Image (cartoon, rainbow, N blue to C red; front, top):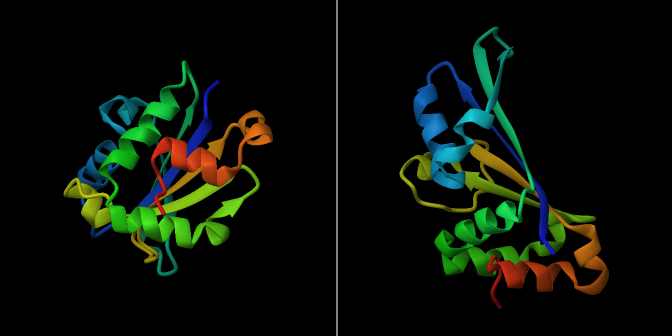
Length: 148
């Protein structure tokens, strides 16, 4: 049984940012296969400044989302895994886990959790059937995302 049903990812870029670098950050997080799945929307900011929003949704095929999350977990520093464990209550809603990764560090291929504004937002939808027989914490341990 697949552990992850869906992964939603979103970030934005202001006019002063290099859009290619934002795409590189997403590729560094999720792998190069996602480039075709990224949707972009153009918005206007408070002072009519252009903002580009990057979004993608990865639906589970052959448990491929499990592998993506396990790959993220292997690259996530132990301190961030401990932080995730401590702050789990504020990051979970139902079967969803909310993560925010530092976008600038992702561009440099360093995965770091962040609570700042310049982030890549990730929502991990855990398979609700899996949660009938296992807790969210146990499932995240199985994926390697949290340590005690």
